[in-house]
Length: 125
Image (cartoon, rainbow, N blue to C red; front, top):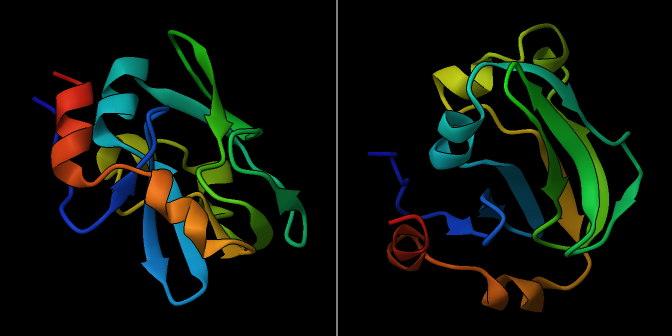
């Protein structure tokens, strides 16, 4: 059974969002990393790049597959977790500790389309 962290928001494409003021901290769920297997590469946007909710902003590669990362919110990338370039396995070890990017949101209303932990749990049953 995959872990689902309370207090986060989730997209149906398995990204999680932690809201910190106007900044969305974005990663992938424990379910997503367990389905992918050992993650070997993380493709991330650059700082100051714009991301749009519903569009891909990068990708994860594993020994089994490659999967696009879909932005749960729109805005400007203000930070990226460069440690994942050398240690992508951090996502396998702690999916909720290994954030991928931080986005200054341009429309906080987009958060309303995301799922809470209970609703997300139903999507992966």
